[in-house]
Length: 144
Length: 425
Image 1 (cartoon, rainbow over the protein chains, first blue to last red):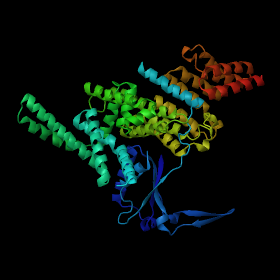
Image 2 (image 1 turned 30 degrees about the vertical axis):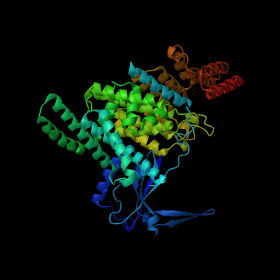
Image 3 (image 1 turned 90 degrees about the vertical axis):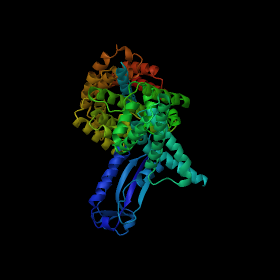
Image 4 (image 1 turned 180 degrees about the vertical axis):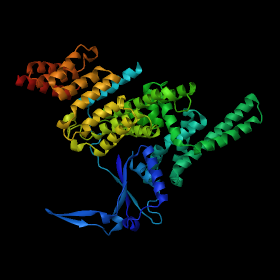
C-alpha cells in the first residue's frame, strides 16, 4: 500500500527561508535510507504559497486566488510517497525522519493513497501471458 | 494492557521487523558466518521484543534494541563454544584471547556499512547451490521479512513444506560453507542473474494471482519490486538490475487497468491508459535509462523493459511504435532465442509492416514442436488472417486455439472471434 506523507508548513517555510545545511544533510541521508530500503517512490519540497495559487469553484464560475495563504498549519510544505506493507510501517518510517522544522514542534501527516483495484482482480491477458512465457523460457535456458 | 493496545504493539513489532530484519540478519551473518544461526539469533531477539515491548513500550530506536539483544546472544554463544573447545581440547587461556578478539570484531562489524552486508545476504539467499524454490523461500524470509506462513499462503503450498524448504536450504548453505561475500568478475554477472531470476519469479507469481486469491499472492508483486529496488541501489553498477526494476515498475503501472469490473482480462491494446499509474511509469523509464546508460541495452530484462516502455510511452494504442518493438524483439531473440519471442516479434512485425509480413514469420513457426499445443500460435495466426480478409482460414485457427486453451474465459473469447470470422467471409 502507498502513503502520502506530508510535512506541514511553518513561518519559516512560508517565508521562503531555506533549510539549514545540517537539515539538508540529515534529510538527504534519510531519503537515501528510504530509497535503499526500496520504500520511497517520490518526494519533493514545495515552494512557499506566495508562489502558488488557488482556484475557487462556485457553480460554473472559477475564481483565481493568489497566494500567500494564511492558515500556515494546514499548508503542505513537502511530501513523500512511500510504498510499505502497513500503516504501522509507514509510521515507523516517519518516526525515523529528522525534524523537518527544528526548533518548532511540527506534525507530519500520513495518508493512505487509494488503490481499490490495485492487484485486486488480477487475471492474465494475452500479451501479458506471452511476456510471462518469455520469462519461463529464459528460466529454462538458464537451467540448461 | 488492553487487547487493542496489544494488537497495536504487535502490529508495530511486525512493522519494525519488516524494516529491520534483513539488516539485522545480514549483520549477524557477518559476525557468526552462518545464515541459519544468524536468523535464529535474530528470531530470538524478536521473541524477546514480543515479550518485553507490550509492557515497556516500543523503544525509541527499536532497530538498535534488536541488534543489541541479538548481539548479546551471539557473544554468549561464542563464549559457550569457546568453553566447549577448552573442555575438549584443553587449550586453557587461549579461550580468553579468542573472546577478546571476537568482541571488538563484533563492534567493528556493527559500524561497518550495513548495505554491503545486506547485498552479501541477497547473494547467499539466491545462491545457485540451492533449488529455485529454496532460493525464493529463503529470499522472501531473510530479505522480505515474510513469515513462513505468509510465504506458504502466497505460493499456495502447505506451511510445513516451506518450513522444511528453508531449514534444508540453511543446512545446505552451512554444509557447503558458502562465503559471506559479494562475488567478483565473471562470477558476479552469473550470480546477479540468479538473484534477478528469483525476484522476477516472485513478481510473476504475484502478477498471475486471480480473483479471490489470498491478498498475499498479489502482494508478492510489491515484495518483488521492493527487493528489486533494494538490489538496484546496492548493486547500482549492474545494468540488468535496473533493467528488471524498469520492467517490473512498468508492468505494475498497468495493474488497475488490466481487468474489467467482472474480473475479465483486458488486452494491453484495449486497456484504458488513463488508469496506468504514471508515477510507476516514470520510475520505470528512469530505471530503463539508467540500465541503458550503464551499457546494458542488450540485456534480457532491459530489452523486455524497453518493449514495455514503448507501450507505456504511447498515449493511445494507435501511437505505439511497432517498428521499434519489432526491432527490440529481434534483439531479444539474439540474446535469448525462443519460439515465444519469435511469435511476439511476428505480432509486432504484423502491426508495423502489415499482416503479410507478420504471417510469414508465424508460418515459419508452425513446425516448431514446442508451440504445437500453444494456443497463442493459432490465435495470432487467426488474427493476421482476419486482417488479410481470409475469414474461413481465420475461423479454423480461432477454433483450433479455443480447443487448446485451458482458460474458460479465453476459450469463450476465441469462439466469439471464430464466429465473427465466419460471418465476415
